[in-house]
Image 1 (cartoon, rainbow, N blue to C red):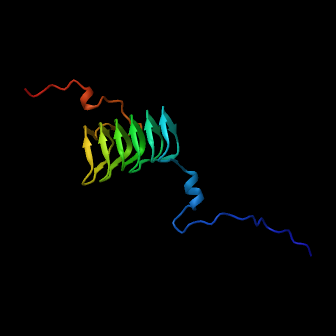
Image 2 (cartoon, one colour; image 1 turned 90 degrees about the horizontal axis):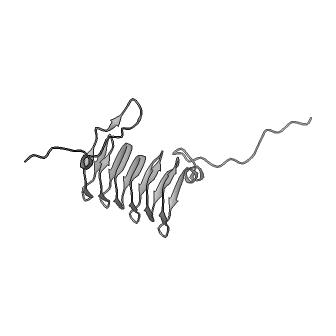
Image 3 (cartoon, one colour; image 1 turned 180 degrees about the vertical axis):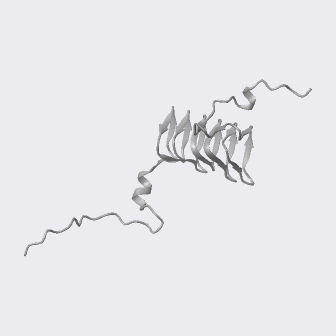
Length: 152
């Protein structure tokens, strides 16, 4: 006569493309355009930078520097996308993408680097520093830090 009802708690709607908007928001952090940070940032979330960061950024996930974003310091991440401005070295575990609006003054190290037409870049590119056995970047000095004989 009396039936036990199954759990009918409301669940967030899923997008036909995978995660719901709320799930997507929970997995990334946005530093807004009016925010300025000095110091070291570290964590395991995706990060979108629209403001200004001065210091080292060391994340285990994806980093995007938006058109209004700027960084002065080294950046370590899984995939790094630059639409804004970076003055420092970039270390990508998977790849680095420099969009047409992006400006980088520093060295880039990743197994895959994509420079789109219109992007501005001054520095060196190192695609041989990837250590597949350890799945981490080797601590190999960048080209400008090595004692490379000059061609004189």
